[in-house]
Amino acid sequence: MLAPSSFPSGEPPQQPTRRRLVQLACAATLGSPAWARGPGSSPGKSPGDGPLVLGQSVPLTGPTAHLGRNYVQGAQLVFDQVNAAGGIGRRAIELRIQDDGYEADRCADNTRRFIRDDVFALFGYVGTPTSLAAMPLALQARVPFIAPRTGAQAVREPLHQQVFILRASYREELSLVVSTLRARGVRRVALLRQGDSYGDAGLDALTRALAAQGLGLLGQASIERNSLDVSAAVRTLAPLRPEAIVLVCTYQAAAAFIRAVRKAGFAGLFAAVSFVGTQDMIDTLGREGAGVMISQVMPSPYVDGHPLATQFRAAARKAGGRVAITYSAIEGYLAASVLVAGLQAAQRTGRLSREGLVEGLESLGRREIAGFPIELGPTRHAASDFVELSTLVGDGTIRT
Image (cartoon, rainbow, N blue to C red; front, side, top):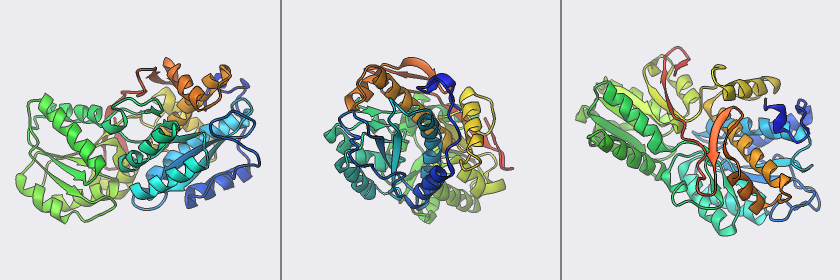
């Protein structure tokens, strides 16, 4: 759980009520709002007595549904704790969730609806194509856009006043991946990428990382978002005889490709970026996943080896097992913790507004939140550059 000093009252919160748990379960399963706005509430531009409503568009259906659901679950742990302790200046945090199926058009529609409803901020969007569809709408409406789950450079550069990123970039992830491959003597590297802005971000990051090692990309193939048809990609990449293939896609496509390209004779290494969905890769591949490397932007949630993991796991246990122990969930937990710190900073200055939230986040500077080091300021809106490499063992565990 969060440290007692993280709560306005200074006391740790109580377990959420059964009614509250049912509300969240319905929201996470069906994509319906976790709360209905109360009469007279004004969550957007002006401070008041109503709830602080956050809009979150995530995949709750389709091949990436687990990523969205787990991120929501991790974040909600924090919001439940804060609300149980009195909220932010006695205003509850309410998370309104809409399903976008990991499709940019649906995400844009959800975002327009949130903006029309005058939400206080947009939080925790999942995916590159969806985040890039929503971000221009947020900027136009001057609504804070906090902690999108993407490592794409396009959400980082140029710096926008309303946009704050929690995680390290794909450039930082793939720099570590390529350095590790080179240390193992690998020179021939190919890429399987999603055929959209997520894949574009991966191509940019991998090309840069290889160039820094004096290498070029051997070849690439793309697959459509939310598709499992990897046959063309196998026909393109297998004949190139790469020593390693980098995967910039989601877990179902990655798993289908790994199986298919191995049947085609490939016996080299695989490495994926964090968005792939680590637990889903473990569950889908089983023993076939042994040796697959995945770069991570959060410490492992599976053991109490990091203060953040210890706090997250304790909070998940107190929630009675309703929260999955995954990398997506721990990232949602940390993202919500950072957002709460920004809200608390805004409340202390008497500016619990959108502009006050931006200033509050920028005022955090260099500190630890939930045991994890971050740094934010007026010229730095990317909180972390933490990256480490994990490897699937093949027995349902990972090694970091």
